[in-house]
Image 1 (cartoon, rainbow over the protein chains, first blue to last red):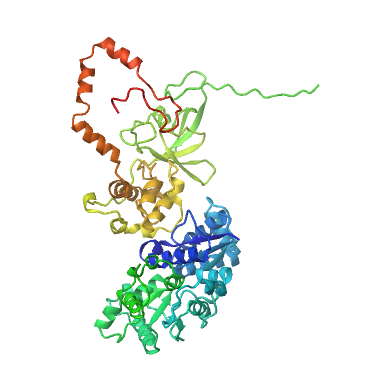
Image 2: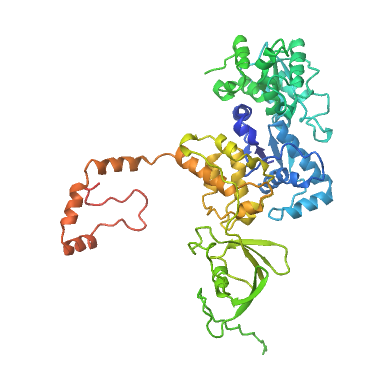
Length: 294
Length: 263
């Protein structure tokens, strides 16, 4: 079994904490994944129409690169990259005519027919590592931290590429339980964060995100765990503005699930890169007496 | 006994890269901007065009494959595939349809390199069009220097200036990449900026050069230079002939001269 790791552009720029904490966790778990030596933008956001084939070239080219390297699976961390790559993979598997058109256009590459499985990091943990194995490696359980998984849109929609069925949040729930956190049921876990609408509204005016935060606060949730840089930005980085505009009454910091995992596995707190989260995230961990600095 | 009839190879008269046709030299048809010309088969595109009567006022530079002034697009009769090359380096082939693209009106941003940093943000701000890349790879296919153009644009989108600078190192700024880009990205100008930022802010300074300059300025070598300058021709010649030389294949760092006073 060979697994290629596809990071995605945002993890190299604005969401380094998502990636670095994941890599530190894998090291602590003794899992070896190899970053692809050649990769391009995943193509996010996935083309809205299936006949807009030129916008499938980007994701398919990454899948070709994984196949070239002899990989059976390609693992991603970012929800958007996961969604885009998995959907392009679906198209290449299911639609022979479009697959042909794409392969013929990409005459500089080997043909591709969906040979590589696109999986999310949570699925990797579940299937390749196992929750029991992770539990054995937990050194600093997150006892007393009330967390809820926040999936947003792209981990589960459309159903065909969802990491699990709509309405079920069991993968991240299992992870959070495994690392000792108290998982609070959260009925807005798959509500939209406002996505790219944030570009068109003033700071602190994104109602969709404010609604999610309010729902979390009233459910007694202290922190949200996500795997999407855009969700993290919309929910986590805007809370001061929401507060100033009276859109929310209490803050609920956001973390990448990989940061919580790394922290529980006892990796150097520096490697969790909490400094890249909103300051409220650090304040919460400090209030809960978790170690956030070396 | 076998009566093999081996076809004798056709005798070719090479013309080298001379544009004067020797007697008996074979000519082939090429099409320049759609018009047919018979040219010697051993010429480069540039020489062939000059043979046909064209005079390059622009679109010709070093004639050595490094200045990027003579990018050429061509296609072979009967095939849809486009090919790319430098006119001064590519040898003509029969039934080649070709056109010169000496200049491409690609966007080039102005900036002050002194006011930048190692971060890719400035490149993203000056050339936001790089995010229009759909990874079609036509740029890479068009590159006469075999630079992986799409890969360095991808590296810049990932904020990796060093990777972009290294991948684009062989770029000669011909602009063929930009001529093929559906995202209207001026790849070669973006790459040049990446290499400038890499050179100024990322690549470590060569410390040994700094210390050597200091030595020179402190006058350490003044007397040696004065001695050499004062030497008569014959002594100088003899000194040169008898000089110690590092053996050609000496493993790195193993050789030391016997005379160490100049080290």
